Image (cartoon, rainbow, N blue to C red; front, side, top):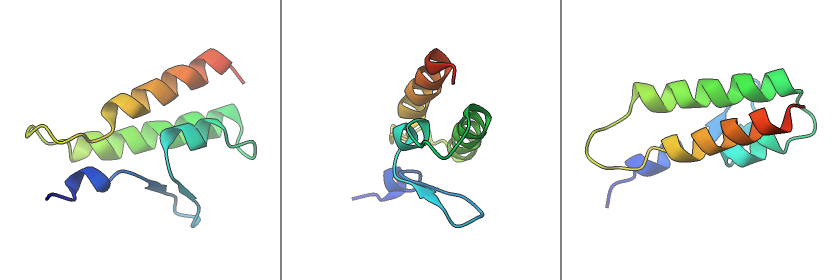
Length: 75
């Protein structure tokens, strides 16, 4: 069983905070809209950098949904 799909299952920031899912970023009241967008975009860049063509889910779809949701909130 591969653990590759777990590699990006959470996002760790340099300041030591972690997010369990992209949606937890969107719902974090301590972050402003720009910070949330920045975190989601960086998470997506990290996933894309290591994206594999072997069918392993690398969270691309989940991140896209969170980015769309954030854009819809406009906060």
